[in-house]
Amino acid sequence: MASGRRGPDGLTDLERDICHAVDKGLTNLAAYRLVRPDSKSANITAEHYIWRVRQRPQCAAYLKELKAKSLARHLNAKDQIIEELASVAFADIWDLVAAGPDGMTVKPLEDLPQAQRRAVSGMSISRTYYGGTIRLKMHDKIRALDKLCRLFGLYDQADRADKDAPALGDVERAQRLAAILRLADGTGTANGDVG
Image 1 (cartoon, rainbow, N blue to C red):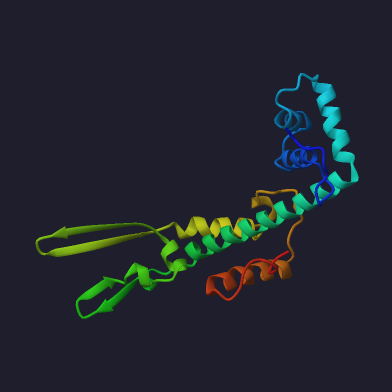
Image 2: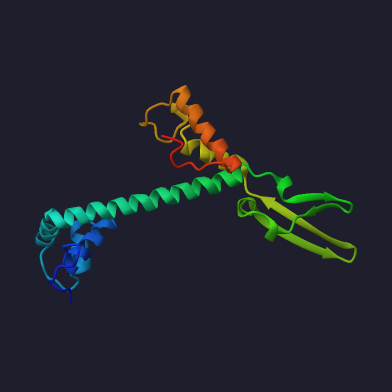
């Protein structure tokens, strides 16, 4: 059972649980049923109760804090996705192989940077009496480039997935393209490079 005492943040355990349920995206009714599963309250009563709890100043402030943390996690995940796509889109097969006296050989994968290893989607090794072969398969660069271009809004308004977003000017389009190229070089991150 939740304690009625207020913690250092000014919230009771029940209020904190309600805020976390709401932060997960639950409706007022679903949040109530989650924090009070044995309650027999009518739906309208349960919804009104959660609404009243959310109006309390300490709960509103805590919900705002939770939302800011969720947004920061979302932006961090977005940066990771952009970096992953850029490592695939700008991968070069010559980073994975080396020419030597015995012909082409695959560099030891454990010696390669993680960004170069990400571009590999598969590897097969076949051994025969006369030697062996290693086949590397790279992820689809065109699809990765397409996704980056969509993410950065580089397509014309008619081709864009989000048709309601404002059209990009030439300067902003150039800035976004420069941000993608910096990602490819490993000299920057997308965070703060684009609008």
